[in-house]
Length: 264
Image (tube, rainbow, N blue to C red):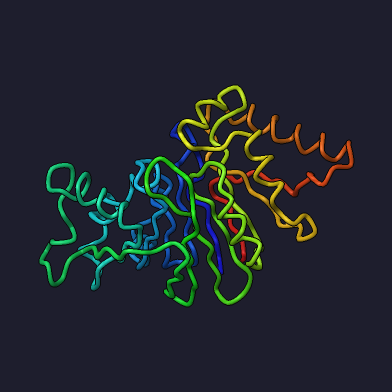
């Protein structure tokens, strides 16, 4: 399975695109502003979109993408999300006020978009992939995803704070790559806690749940552009401290960047 990072920033700025991942050519995980880097031909190949939650940085490009390619497709785009996320999209985006209701256009029987409800822990089979929604702890209904094309799993936390249930499930999976958010620096740890995001301090606590013998590469995503350098330094520091004191805390931590491609 080929993974292409379209966007992984926690906000917009020059060269900063918000969350979106393309799996092979046909499955999109989140639809942030990174989708805008795709050509029309590339967008047209996307049959399924899996959303982690309804916040704008994760769905901003979805209505625009549908509008750009719907007339060039012969079947609806399938949007998979938690019931609360679908309800938010219908009420606040595809409501004929902010954007046309493409779940009823051009007709209810042949729409441009079809919504499909998902459930935490219940895997979906699409395009030769197993996609399992994972628990997340956020301010709106939210999930992460574990995705496999027959081998090891690519795992994405989505937006989340401390989340014991996520790690319990992770220990049961053969994971080849973990993408985990760290939206705020330690100086903003109270804001991170209140908005249900991770800071480096909370990240260190979360990574302590991992079995270090597995040596899974951990990629950091969703940093705020104004704090990325500081967040990176703080994460590097806690990992160096763990190594120096011979604690079981050192990790294979790497930095996710838009434009990166991986074979999972």
